[in-house]
Structure formats: structure tokens, C-alpha cells
Amino acid sequence: MSCTKDASEVSSPATPTPSAPTPAPPAPTPSSLLVNSSLIGEYSATDLASRVAEAPVAGALAKYPIRVYRLTYTTPNTDGKPVTASGALLVPTVPQPLPLLSYQHGTIRPSDEDRAPSHYSTNSEVYSAVSVLASTGYIVSAPDYIGYGASKALPHPYEHAASLASASLDMMRAAREFCRRENILLNDKNFLLGYSEGGFATMALHKLIEEKYANELTVTASAPGAGAYHKSAFANYILSSDKPLNFLSTYVWVLDTYNRVYGINRPFAYYFNPPWAAQLEKNSFGSVPDQPKQLFTASFRTSILTNTDPQMAAAFHDNDIYDWQPKAPLALFHGTADDYVPYFNSEDAYKAMQARGAKQVELHPVPGGNHFTSVVSYTLQALGFISQYY
Image 1: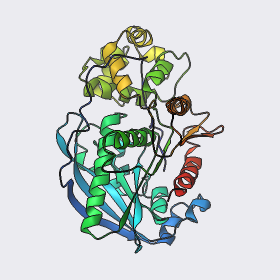
Image 2 (image 1 turned 180 degrees about the horizontal axis):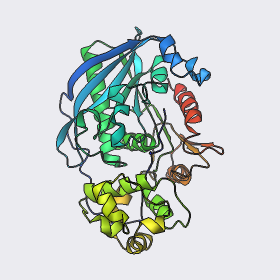
Image 3 (image 1 turned 90 degrees about the vertical axis):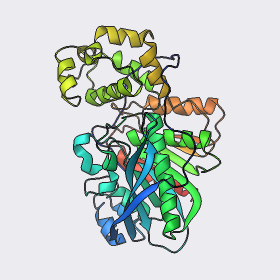
């Protein structure tokens, strides 16, 4: 599990009035979502352990050989129209029924397309630690998300909770469909893991399943790590900051996504000062300054900080997924020194869930950990957490 130095989240306001609705997920599930499947390869436990040689504790967990498949399936895009998406399915070769684990990957820039799970490339998250995780006895469903793999011609809806959740849910459905067809034994348990954007996606997926699809799937336990669950507060944090922020380019990506997905469609000059507005219009992944007040226009910053931009406020609020009551056990993991996705995102979620009466929510700080140094600790602790419910 991991994340890259592009893996986070957002910009935004206080508590807004809803505006543009989020189209995904759509309604009834078709009887078949699976489009196609192909075998990528078979790998021994020894091979898998060697991929995490720098973390021998993790390597020692490798137990079973696995087969890795590429699946394509249908899922709704942000406009509700069906698209063909893809993902990887990692299957331990054991005779007994196993649980399904949905693993949501961290941020992948479009230029790093080969890191999407269905490519199963050596520099991907699923190739190393996630393969070892599968080898311990989990059938792992790893969605690419919209914008990668089979749907790479489409823009990735970065940090958009509804489409991340629906793409992940439909991959889980396709995985179960594939296993039925291939006589691969699955039990009824469903675990959810992911870090950074994957942590945000994991939280969104857990919420979606329990609130809308509890009659179809039951979440057994989930362990989201370092996600930007409180988008409104995160936006205020960014736009009011007087300090340099090293990851503003990914926050630009979030803003660009919401501007498009929610039909706000303002020119970049509304959000960004010159010369960056023109540069970002040409290449939204271009370099930007590290000072928010240098990058974002004063009028945009003021409108968010004073809650006078109802359209963008509603978009951020639609992606506030921290304040709800999970039924299944949920453990939040986050480095206390995370300057990419600040720790308050997990702390706010923990407090809000407790206030709503959640009985099985836990907060696991990684003392002194930043967004990147906390990954190994997250991986091992999250596995330990879900293993209690195996």
C-alpha cells in the first residue's frame, strides 16, 4: 500500500447549501457488470516476499501463491453514463472460501498510467505490498478508478467521493461475478483498505455500501488511511495558509475536477493569478508556486473563507465524508505530522462518528509520521486491524 508524492486532496469552505447533485452512483444494478477477464500471471509466495525485501516483516507474511487477473467492467461516470473501467483481481490459490478485500490505490498522475492496478507493473502498489496482502489469504479487488486502465481516455475525477465509491463498488461486484464463473470460493466477508486518495475512496465506499447497498453487501471492517475526509475544512486550511505548501499542484487538480464535475465551469483566471492561470489552462499539471496566496486569486480565497461561493462550497460539502455513523468496525490511520493531508481530517472524522454514536470506530495516530513515512506503519497496522475480523 502506498501513495505517491501526488496523493491528496482539496480546497474549500464551510457548511454550504447543496447545489449540483452528484450523479454517481446510479440506481439498479444490472445482472452482469463483468465485461472481460484475462490472466496476467501466477506468482509464488517466495516471489511475492522478495518484492518487499526492504520490509522483511511484511515479506514474512507471504503464505500462498496468487494468480492475478485483469478485469473490465461497467460503471457510471460522473455524468451517470456507463463506461468500461478496469482493475486487478488477486486470487490466492487455496481450496477454502476466502474474504474479498477491496483495495483503493493512492494518487496516480495521468503521466504515471502504468501504475494503475490492472497494469500490474513493478512500480505499482498492487505489485508489492498488496500482493503480499493477498498472499496472506484475501481475494483482493483493486479498481483502477475512472481515468486509468480501460478508461484512461477519460479525465480522472480526482477526489470525487461518489465516483470513486461507485467504481470501487462495481469492481467488487465484477470480482464476485468472476469468482462465481470461475468456481473461485468466496465467503461473505468484505474488507476495505486504502491510503491517501485511496483512504478517501475507502471511506466513501464504506459509506456508500452501508447507506445504499446494505442488502447486497456487508462491510466486515475498513481501515482508511490519511484521507481528506473533511474537504470543507481542508479548503479553508489551504486558502488561509500563510505558509508554503509543497503539494499545491494536487490541490489544483481537486479544484479543476470539482469545477468540471459539478458544472461550475469557470475559467482558470477566476481561481488562479497570472501567469499560472494561463499556464494551467494549457497544462493543469504544470508547476505552481508553493504559497497559496500567490497562486489563488484574492477574490476566490475570500469567497471560500467567507462562505459566499455557494456553488464551490456545495461541491466541497458534497465531498465531506467525515460526519456519518458507520456500523462496521472502522479504524482511521494518520500521521500526526502529515503536511499533505493534515491529521485533522482523521481526527474530525473520529470525533464526528463518535458523536453520532458509532461504537466501533478507532483512531490510530502515527506519531511524528508524515504522509509518506507513515505508509509502512499504516500497512502493517491496518492488516492487523482487519485480521481481527477475518
